[in-house]
Image (tube, rainbow, N blue to C red; front, side, top):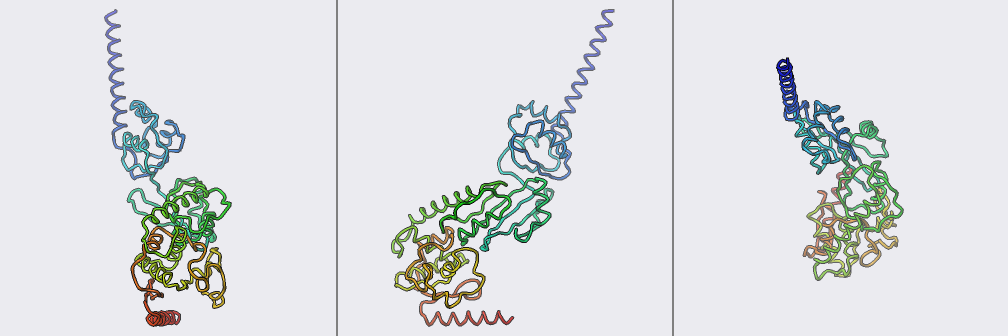
Length: 385
């Protein structure tokens, strides 16, 4: 009898061991075998997420077959505390081991949607919403709008549903501090009030990725710190014979250069014109300074300058005042600041638009008048077409 009981016990134990081995093999296959995703997908680990919450959401998203097996595998690997919040791209067929490596790696997030907000000189901005196909990697723009025109449903729905999105902020060179502040205030993905307009010229243009809810005041403070550093570095490497004596004057001249040309190769030549004029005691006679005196840097003029404005006395009217105006007229980038303190060596004292987006430069008034005549002819031809 006891032999029979022992034999039965051994048989039962063998069955248990076989079942355990089968379960272990099944679990191993689940962990290392091909995953269920037929195409790549994006997954967010939220700040403070538990292993149970992440595993259940991975199963709901179709990235793994079993939340329980995933948890067992994570614990067996002693990785329970390694989850890193962020947005991740999980490729097609990724097994559980790969998924674990992805959601514990940290580093830059991957997003399906990107909202790129470009500030404009009108004091607002344009938001461009794009989507990346996780299967092909191709990026397609699906909406583009200015906030004052209304928010399209494609963007509104994503925001309402809380879909993770990468926000990119582009603040180009040549905007005034008022334009930057008002552009930031219009952005729905930023938070915080701005009590005072920062000092003109002291905001470094930038392209930066931000999180939804980023504070406007902190962004402005970072831009100010960056501009201070740029100005200090560039001033240390200035040419010795320039007719400006302080970093503040360099910033003023750089802002004028920035507003006068959008062609990178021309900055040094434009700087040389103003440097030569200052050295010769000539007035700078540049329209952007007059416009700043009319608008105070708020918005855009939206029309040509009147003769009365060209003759009008404001602190910034360089047709009337000698030398530099008292403040910058915009926020220049590093390249314009470098041009201001290291101008090209030329004899140019005049320049005018040439119809290509650039300028024609001249050393004599006669040459300049000929260039102006050509530009007037181009303007007349364009207005007739």
